Length: 569
Image 1: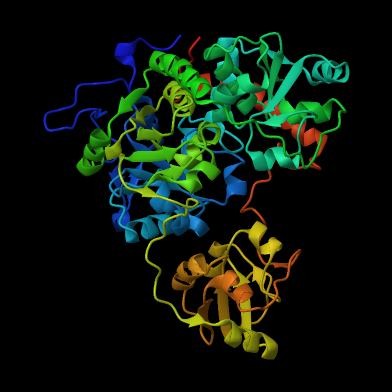
Image 2: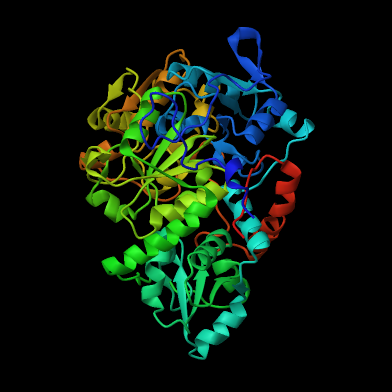
């Protein structure tokens, strides 16, 4: 059961005096969580008990883990968001849009946390403190640690299945039905790129937010069985329950354990498929919208006018996230300015990435078909205050093209053009180090460049590289991250630190080749966590261990006590 309406956030409310019609508001304190103490050097320290209290009370808060993603995935608090210290500037403006939001940071040790505080304050964030005792303090104080990434959404998905009794079908049973020519339609709720990498035979790509609008066109006969799959469990559970909640007349089931379960059952996956759901007539989209709103209203999701949104933004007393839940292609053709592309299924799957400030207001935009309403229904059940923007001429200015991240103003550092760097590499007077992700480095880098975690540049000498070149040239995909890294590198006697102008992309644009594949790795590749449910060639034992972890998430939620999830049953 969901909580009674009086207890739920996100319902239509009467705005305070001076607010515009359609405002969604709830009192929010702008101060750091109660219990924060001042520490030497002007850095506040916040105990884990204060963080947990803020999460339970839904006071706005951001808990930032500044370790590399690979370490983050080994264990973190439920609502901690991964903000690797080496990529901080690349992510903060979009993910933390309000500069006065209370932020609590922790890392692999005190130096990490101190560096994060320094950088965040330099970017204008006013209320930054350090988690008392870091992760060790969190655990000794009774806090739970959750593995993997997107833990809030995955734990919520398990709670949905346990509470709503979401029906599922085993891989072997589905395989037999497909082999026997049964009247079954398989829909893949992942992103199209994931579907194209590997898919269940006969499956059609219908990303999660599209299901309610498009599944009926693939299975117009109510006698047809609809099976929803993803790579593991979460998106298939949420997708299946979306269709059930919206009243699809067909029998709907989740493929138990997704492509992982299919692989562990010894069945073959397809690769490189292109099947996508057809467009639907306007009348069908309107019916889907009405069905989705019937669900959204039960969860307390609201509507907000353009005037109400502007008022909330102008007050500036809380974080407001703005997301466009349509497909990336639709977004690129035209979207409201300052709305970020976040296809609804992925938004529900990756709330910790898209909206790391717990307690924020989430505003969704779409163009009907039930996508925004159904997405809102799930976010509301996850404890978010969520509203769907009403359509109208006053919605605001529009833009086109794909979403592009916002960057702070780049620091002034010495730059070197490709001609200079090529000459220095030829005579051995410079070392080039790529500080972007290891994945991007392996996909294509300046020939002769090495890769390192940005944090390792602070150590005396470069790990794994003896000697000290006359020049250290840093690069990244477009050069922005390299400029921030260059500004942070401590002075080195006899070594000048520069950034490659326009980065690796500028090198390639000058007509010079890139080198792909393995290169010199000066740091461990902890910056990227390889998901056991994405890609191919994953060890079966690793896949089974991942499933076993997911099965235990409901019990872990109960022990944690901070989630605030409810399920429409």
